[in-house]
Image 1 (tube, rainbow, N blue to C red):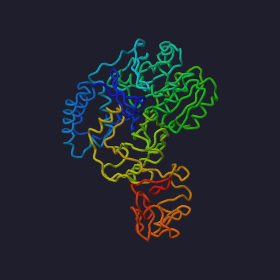
Image 2 (cartoon, rainbow, N blue to C red; image 1 turned 90 degrees about the vertical axis):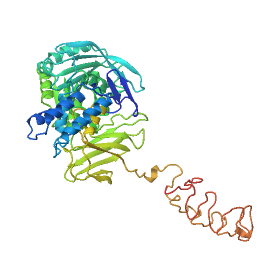
Image 3 (cartoon, one colour; image 1 turned 120 degrees about the horizontal axis):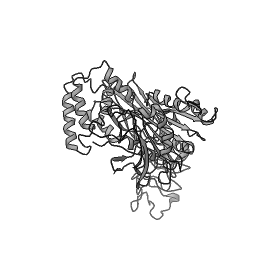
Length: 528
């Protein structure tokens, strides 16, 4: 089975296939445990999953290459097989343990697939790239496979973005390959910014080298590191904040000149390495998070210290409460995955969506609060909420649903397949719509009621209200000045269908209501 991968560079409704990579528009899915934690938990946990070996064998066929992703019949049979096995689990322990599935999927991702070459730098390979306009091209990528790599044990991945004109092979050789820990244990890759790889203008392009390596080696989905060098640091920060905030375990900046920080910057750890002991960019990152972020100075042992920081990093962790911001365009959302929520569509295109997601286990409630949210899918599992009880999903103070969600085996693999996410597992989801936002009066659209204009059928400056006469027109069938006018009532009778007994005709107001629901001549429409 090939791995399902994606990039946010394509249109939000499109899925295109390029080589071995299926590209869909979205990035970042997360949960409470890293793969390392999940693997350790699965191997050393006191929780015993019934029929564990049988489940693992079936999962290996499903994700490890034995059955192709497009073989819907073969996959359906495996789902039935796994479902039959876990149905014997009366207490539902397997589906209550997301870490078990994360570990099982990750360990078997390359069960029947061949990994890339190890112990040497590969510099003759190209990766498929999809640009914002939908066009495609192949761009060079240079990589190195860890000497101690085993496809059974997911490895850390470091992808470096180099400035234009840099020799990627020489740089990788002189830097990461020269580090003992990195060259032995990690998967390393380097790409150069160029006219064919304009990351500064299209930050989402940086997803391609990550997923190229995901399809080449068994990479720990919670141990992805993005590195920017020199002039490429600004582009690397754009990638981290605009395209991949929920995917990265860490951001590495060597000699950055400018800080590119937003609320998404708190989602990952950052390591700044520079010549100056008081680098202003480093200062901003340590101010953002002094516990996780590091400011270091170049010198003897600097690279070894950086390597030790990566080696000791626990990896990507989804907090139970986090903030997220993403830009939206007509056909693309820069970072639709937040970590546990997928933004299907904002309320209004062209404006940023800013919101906070909170899981409250004690109250068994999930809250989404913010602006321009629109349509979304929120994910959950037993690590985040008590799925044996009713779960309330709130959005901007309104309760959207309150019910007990059923754990679903297919949900586990659909999120993994659709979003290329094998590090974290969810067993249930809810698709919802944010309540319509009430616009301030100052933002009312043209033709809507504003500051004293007619509202809810009320009269403005002497306009007709509840059948009263406007500008001297007949009221209750009476003529004005006693004279009959073309079409006006004479002798108290209605003529040619004019208003009789106060009834409205042809869209005139009756008791303040509009006919056919439309506003006329700029009058207020149904509560505007």
